[in-house]
Length: 206
Ligand SMILES: [Zn+2]
Image (cartoon, rainbow, N blue to C red; front, side):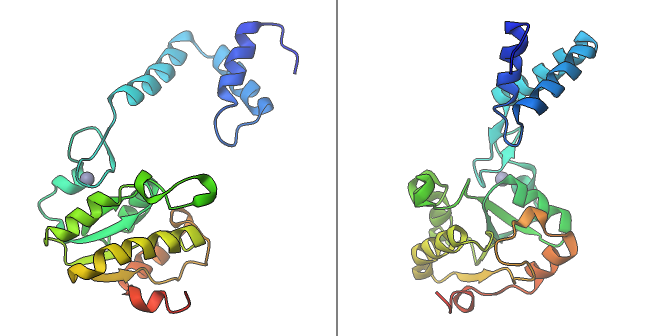
C-alpha cells in the first residue's frame, strides 16, 4: 500500500494492529476519522487514553472495574458462597445478561495454553485457591469454554481446590463443544448454569 502521507500511513499502521482489522479496513476507518470534525477524533482518542490510564481490576474477582472492588463484588445481595470461574470479562458480561446467576465471579484472565506460552502462574489461579482455602466459598462453578485449554484449566484448578471440601460443578453443555460463552444465547447460557452438573461427572471422558 503506497501512501501520499507519512502521517496517514502511521495512523493506518496503528489501526491495523487491532485484531480483525486489515490494512484496507484500517485505511477506511482512518479516512472516516479524517472526515469527522476534529473534536470527534479528540473524544475518541481521549476515551481510549482515559480507559488505559484509569481502568482497574477488581481486587476480589479481577473483573475490569472503575473502582477497587467491582459492582458485583460490592453488591450485598450477591451470594458470596458461590463463585463462578470464567476466562475473561466477556464471559462475566454474557452470564450477567442471563440475569440468573446471583453468586460472584472469578476472572482467570485466560486459559492454560502451553502452545501460546500461558502457564498457570500467568493466570489468577492462586487468588482463587486462597478464596477457597479461606472457607467462605461453598461451591465453585467452572464456566470456561469447553475447549482443550478450557478443560485443562478446569482440571488444574480442580486438583488444587478439591482437598478443601468445596463443591465443584461445571455448567451443562447445551453449548456445543468449542463454542465460546459470549456467543451462546442468553436462554441457553442461563439454562446451562441452572442445570450445572458435578464437576467429577464432566471429566469422565478425560
Ligand atoms: Zn469483583
